[in-house]
Image 1 (cartoon, rainbow, N blue to C red):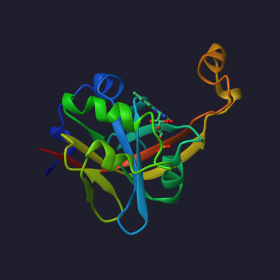
Image 2: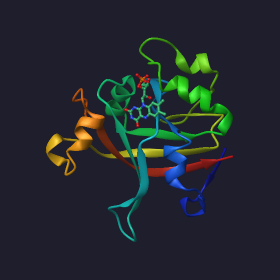
Image 3: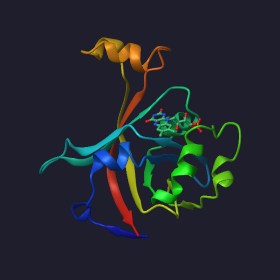
Length: 170
Ligand SMILES: Cc1cc2nc3c(=O)[nH]c(=O)nc-3n(C[C@H](O)[C@H](O)[C@H](O)COP(=O)(O)O)c2cc1C
């Protein structure tokens, strides 16, 4: 994969995240890593000078094994894949790394960077540095119907805002 400047990135974040899905991966070779499928998130800018830092936002429920890695690590990656990997992403989004080596099961190839992990089969990788983490709280919902729809079990997501440090493409 080659590194490109973020200004050269051409994509529609709405379809890229929500429709194509992504793998959220935290951890590295020495400390271990875990990955999960995510389809809720945002790409944009906040803080910093000159229009804000390029940032991603992800949402992780407390019961995900990946959350333990997200909480421990400073870096994480968002990986996007060609259509033929959709089935693999479905599997990684319905099985836990607590129970099995699900990455080996779907045949993806981890690539280890310094403090982060991504997958060789990805078409696009965003390497992110955690800047902000906070749980979504019931008091914050202006539209309370979302609580009943999305959180009947009270398992509110933690929100992670990460600075996009590197963009890798094929
Ligand atoms: C299409 C899709 C999108 C998902 N999006 C999210 C998400 O944005 N946040 C989240 O916490 N879980 C999401 N999940 C669920 C996790 O991927 C799933 O629970 C996974 O098995 C967690 O794995 P882990 O326990 O190894 O971390 C999604 C699952 C699928 C199939």
